[in-house]
Amino acid sequence: MKTNFEYYKVFYYVAKYKSVTLAAKVLKISQPAVTQSIKQLEKNLKCKLFFRSKIGMELTQEGKTIYKYAEAGFAAFQQGEKLLKDMLLMEEGEIQIGASDLTLKFFILKHLNAFKKQYPNIKINITNAPTPLTLQHLAEHKIDFAVVTTPIKNIKDYDVIPVAQIQDTCVVGEKYKHLSQSPQPLDVLTQFPTIALTNECNTRQYIDQFLFKNHIKISPDYNISNLELIAEFAKENLGIGFVVEEYVKSMLEKNEVYKVQLTELPRPRYICLVMKKNSPLSKASDTLVNYFSEFKI
Image (tube, rainbow, N blue to C red; front, top):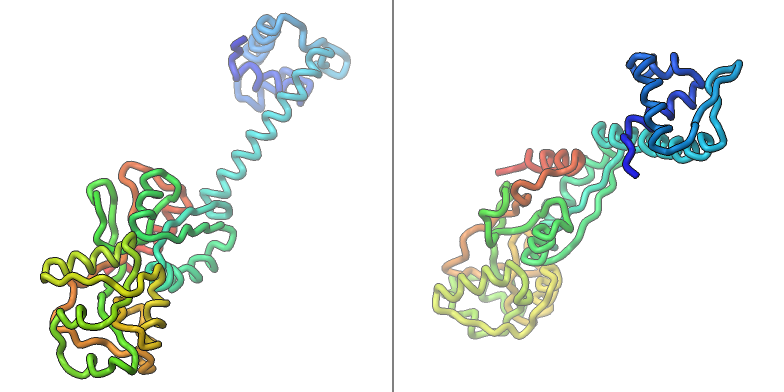
């Protein structure tokens, strides 16, 4: 049975105010239009919904039955409207972010606190994964936007905003400190144990491509999924660690590790905000993207 939703809307207000006149006033339509809607609804439902009494329009037993559901439905609509209003005012909302370890530590954590202070009721969920998997999550609409490092495959499918620059480098511990004291050719990387990220990580893929172009091939002695641990392995004199310089800045300043003076380094990369093209963001996500975009380089 198909019934025009407007008929139920009119029915709800007549039942609520027990008056055709008041319902017409609230709905801003004529009294005959209210009466006609009630008659049409009764015709569709094949029963009387109201009878007139001294106090106004009273519900029949059938009318009381349908009113329980109409009342619940309108309460749900009103609740939905309130929630939507709160979302548009940034009083409610939820954001799904995808991020790699590097971008989480060196960009998101740096700026998220100020955003939360301004919008304390916005819930933020962060999925931590390597860049390729994060972009897959974005393509599958599992996250609203991504914060990842370049290079980005299939970049034509995305809107990309660079927000920070990073530099890949190598570090060692005390045992191999001499590699930091004079320029070293790239093939030095084949002469000592090496520590690198696992193959699925964007940083590792970028380093491998850089070395391949320079006719250098390495087979790391240690493959680790966390950049911070690579620096710790290097600190413990387990070999040359491939890291992002910004990631180990404090360790370099404390002389816990030392930067290998390679004669050639990969080109700088970028931390980027990535959104899927033609996929609109919620008010909360759009606000956070705009906030993060203020730091673009």
